[in-house]
Length: 217
Image (tube, rainbow, N blue to C red):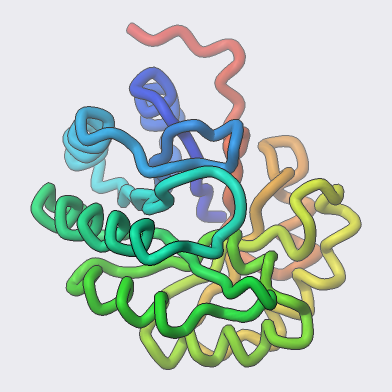
């Protein structure tokens, strides 16, 4: 099973690599769901992960709260993507939703085009898309070569055990080539069971590995 860890500081980068994590999602301010990390942390993570061949996905999110962005915020995200490309980042994650709860295609198209040639992941903004529009959103994202969607399968306040039925539906309805990455409430204790229920081989979480008793050299 591929384990992706969400983290937000240099110490956790080191812990994750010491535990042979498979992929890193790099943020700052995980307490609000993750924001764009500072350049110093990005370069540290890229350097630390490079020798081990571990992919680093960098969050592009200018503020906490919803995913309905103003013109100025979109411009900030476009500049962030330009900077990340210059730093050698290969994978980025972002998401934009309209006030009506639909995929913000206009904004997403701008961001996807600006991200090239970096690979794009759509993050948990997906859970703000109304259910009846999610299948169509998956198809659109797939058409524009988004490689995977990180989703809790429902409101982040809901236990993941309660969102498993919808996660299973998303996995079944996802177009070929688009990976559904379950996250939010996934940890090293329940990951194997969730993987079996959903028949997935990739999971995401800030506690996907047990670092409680690790002492770094």
